[in-house]
Length: 141
Image (cartoon, rainbow, N blue to C red; front, side, top):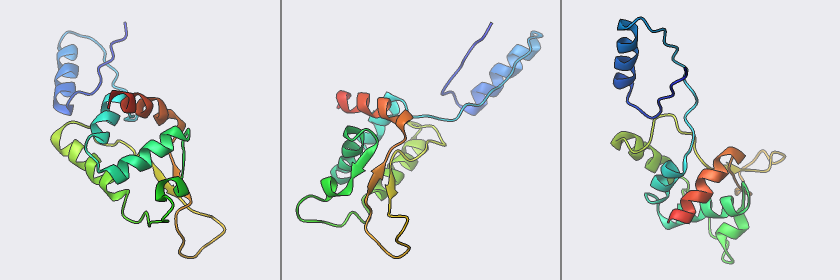
């Protein structure tokens, strides 16, 4: 028999393991990396400003690539500081219990590896395995 319990507080998981042990059951605890789900993604999207939301939206629509020119617009605005609210929203979500600790950042700024000096970001990437969760989250908004 295999029982999977996800997204429970650590103290509750410990109690379950102890209860099983008192009944002579062998329990194996296997930690899986924390991943984005549609619910978690929706929680994040509802907690970030429009500029950060647009970065994630363009990246999801681009199947994991968000070209900076589409985010900057015709006026060529700087993207500096626009991903900070994403990180802060994840931390808030963890603090309030809406998000589990250890969630990876959904988008990562990408730069030209051949240019070692200061440069503007070329765009943003999102790992392929995050895309379904964020697509569904955008449908829910």
